[in-house]
Image (cartoon, rainbow, N blue to C red; front, side, top):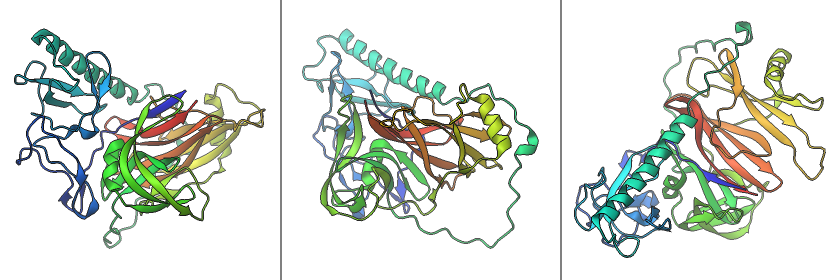
Length: 398
């Protein structure tokens, strides 16, 4: 049983030099006032009526363990437990990368805490969960210290490119969003606009209400943002609801970029793997059945160093014709070979590399999908502060 979505510390909220979010501290409604996020100028981003933050898309875990979401304004940002005025509590939202602390109304769960001690206990428990989540993701993204050595002759640095006149890159279409279709609705994985990358719910602003597109064999039109529920687990994933307009030509893949792929998108296909490298990969595998297939799935500079990395797909066919089999991805990076750094991701069945998106800041995003008898997923690995690691994913199935 699985349903999972991760967030990345690579956050960007600017397009064309215009801020997409209202700046905090420049007027706006006070804490506790009702609020609603509306589409920003030209249909991009959200206008936030609050002084600091509208909680319309934020879950709050109540003292009894239940979760609530109310469209009201938050108060001061960057608080500490016990540091908010009367009638407020310092709530720490569970973000895997950022310290997301705000004063919020103490009656957001209904009745406020009966005593100051109960309120402080609620604040400290929220901070504990928030700190624990960031700590766990930091450890998961840390690279493995054990790296078997490859012969230096097998991998050579890329030659320095010849000097060419500078050519301005083409303008990126607003809102290249990687999604997976859950029926007509779209589960949001990662999105790019210009030089910025965002994940999960941050991508909703790039598909405002009324956006029309072709995806999953249908012409679609978005209707509103929502949390999509994986039926197998009842877990929620940020998404955009859409209505089906008509059948559209094409393969009808559940995953893909909407309304279009980024200009730098490079699709990848499987190709034969050098026998010497294949032998080295086999030496790292726990099992090497006769029908194992090793193929080169991608050749690209993923981490932003002078060398191109090789991604190898190890595929194990299934004896059961009803099952798609199983595959794993391996990374040949500089002088080492290791499993693809996907710590914390929900992976199952067959892993297929779909393509890479080179980033202006260096390195590239690697996009791959998973499919098994009971579900599917879309996953992104790319450069992080700790090296190559997980960026984002959505997966659902049993």
